[in-house]
Length: 444
Image (cartoon, rainbow, N blue to C red):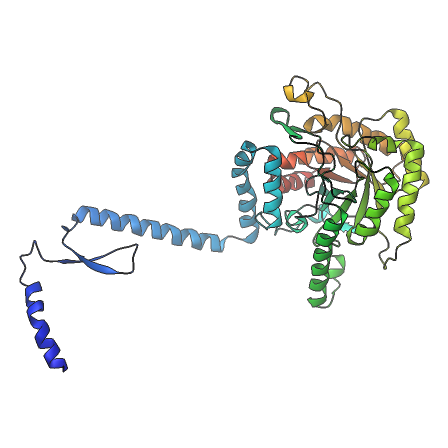
């Protein structure tokens, strides 16, 4: 059939379509939610409705375009600030969850990069050098948050000057039965009796090894080091300093052997190592803080570290983390051992088994475990000040316990700390707390 014949055969249909009364004439109609079009005999909408719909649609499109245009003109620092402030909206959701579930979700989010990344450089006022390592700021995340080194990159990316993973035990262990974490919301505190729940040194070594390899690859593929790059902060894990906190297994009868295994397996990935002898949730652990026990332990761990082959930067510094529940004689003994064996640093302090008056009325205060958060601040700061005096300022101290603001961090420094750590306050305040602390701390 030719073109003329096709047109002729379709002419009757064309005439029928155009001889309907106006009210019955089929109306060609488009859908906003479909790419197809079809015919409808529905009555046309009123002109006012059409006009209002077009105005609303135009307004929304205009707002989106204007908003996008505005965001595109905002500098990176401002946009970064918005992202950190926006995390406050998520805090109420986490507060509704079981503490351990909330913790697990937070680690997963940081591991997957679902947290803000700090793009704003730290003020040069905050920078310092300790143990030959350059810290961009003195505010770190304490051990216990990322026990198995699952989210190191994400956590360092939040703007911490350093992150400490662990405690890591040689053999995987479940820790104590659940529930084992309790929120004391009004007191901004937590009681935990986790008991060194750990995936073990080999799982952690695998993760840290992968990250270390990635870091080395990035360095190799980058341009030649310039004079400016030589002053760059950071460590083996990336933009910040990485500490590895070592623990012992609950059933182990040879504590020194456990710590030595940790040194042999993990020290190559650490910017510093920590011997944790102060958790209240592992039976007999705090007895290792006694003068003779601590001396024997530190000697064996130092020997294990020093017998390994190290590059130009030398072995990682070795620190000891102590409890706040110590007598004056205990503190004197620890100071004497630390000075005699030239321990590289002390972390003061771990959680407390005491219950200050500020939490005594809370029913959850009766739970067994270590108390952390705001109620621990005065006790841990007092021990920090005393230890600074006993060590005559010769050993770098990390102030930990109850730090929840820039003012708290500054008080720790004034009491003798070189660096500070937080944990519980981060659990309550989220990522938005970090830039707030650094800002206030930088103002002195």
